[in-house]
Length: 294
Image (tube, rainbow, N blue to C red; front, side, top):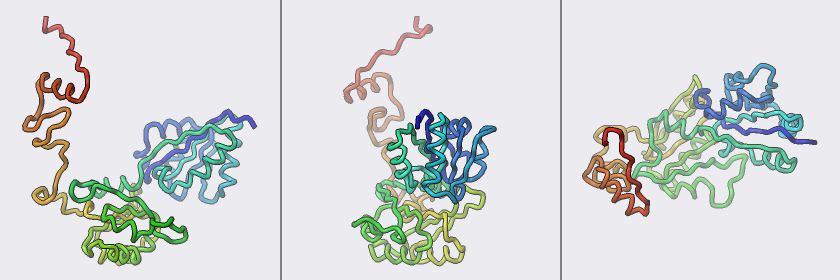
């Protein structure tokens, strides 16, 4: 078959249509065929389709069915938008689709999307990498129907003590809470569970490793939820007085010198800035004279 069309694997974000990237929205608007994960992507995103576009919901389709639609459309020279939730690089089941397109010589491109991990952090008003609290984020899932590679079980990963973002595992909350404490997380470690973040029925549950599992059970949450564990999601960090106990970034610190600013100075004169550029190995060009300088 001739494969003159193009396939776009698009990250639709966590649920809010306004979290689509401009590029994703443009491609969806122009696509001839749309295949969207209708169990995880709101229909409002598929509704951006132009008149006459063919739209398929993939929740009841098998991989061969999805790829049959995709390959036939590409062979007809059409543009295909394969819309998936969050970002395709995280638990997106995209590798098997890309292998088939590689084998068939189909042109394709991946359009990144907003991961639920970052949408949840935004709702929590949390920075996942707080200086001297956590500078590492581990994204993983608990072992269940899908086996984990050796060394990636939750207990092994938890020994790092970093911020943990756990996908696809909310039904195992009691076991997760116990395993994390066994691995060394204190019982009072903050935990946040974000249910359907970005959707109208979004729900955020906060707690600690001692009580979060029961709170999740009481809320009857069994799917479409993300778990974030670690001191970085402690709401007390937002306390204006927390700066006395918690380190802050050097980036805007008045005591820290970097390429654009010296310690103790809020800004630089041109000569100071030139010194810093030259120290970094950059060639500094004089600014052109303005009309007012003549």
